[in-house]
Length: 424
Image (cartoon, rainbow, N blue to C red; front, side):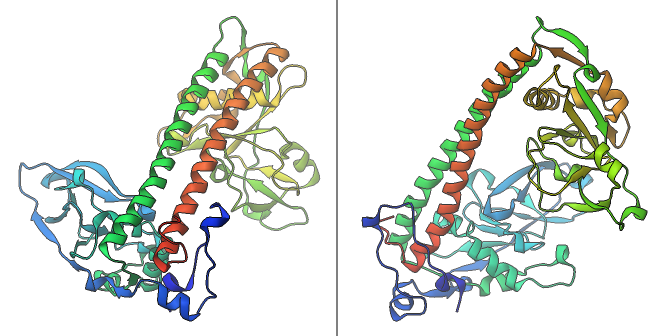
């Protein structure tokens, strides 16, 4: 049985009076009340329009985002800067997918503004039949259930090179409600979209305010300007060595791959042998700020995040990172964090970095950077104000993410009818 029927969704956020009892999985009611499963090949068809790359002609290039997030413009190209002799043409309201890594959900409905854009032959297109509304299919393309079905059908031996052929996509079965019901489902899901978009815009606006206030605080001309090593203790991490892959003091350590813009990704933390004295030198304490020391990508140079003892075991750091630590009586951890965030946002870290292909800040350059240093009391006031705004951004982003999760399950519930369209 398809996951579309196996899994039901109950909106726990809805008032109790709006939730109806859900029949047990596999019961006659759950089987009969869902909309009939039909192969996509019955309701849409492969329909590829090819255009030859003509001399002296400019084409608008498009790509398809993962997770059904839509189409993206990728600039312009001509016959002289591509090896393709012909390209596929996108038409409004068609379904387009990327065959390569299809398990990541690169499938969507083409918006009107991308009509006439071109893609490579890695992107087959499909025309919807009269039984499907394009807006409804757009929401289906954003469903993890569809991506799971795509993943189950990919072929190939190397994970990143696995492909989904058009014929395999058309074999996938999904519940197809009548067009009138599709229209009502679109209304419900579009309403959630509107809320998500409004929250995203609100978070972006608050973040813009936060960045401006942070810049004003870090460039206040009334504060003395001093070298960074007078304000922070700055240390570069220990170099990784194959000889340290095993040993008696295996210790978790962070590297630049773990550091994002104000966030840490601890899903892939490696281990290396650090002896007790090295643990003392390269160990992390609550409030330390880790800064990405170098990268081939300019946007990653200087990316900072604060360590908050997310792991209980001892944690050190590698030489792809710089550690900024507050100096007692001179600076406080929250001020260190906001200064590093400002140095990244304003491009200060990027500007001091040296190197050609890979830019490096280096501890020598880091300690020579200049800092406007207010009193500790003023640092505390600045940090309190900026932290409160930062918390507002995080809360808004969290609510947006929650609504996205609700929306994902809402479509499945509406299709298997465990959620009544009127209650939704």
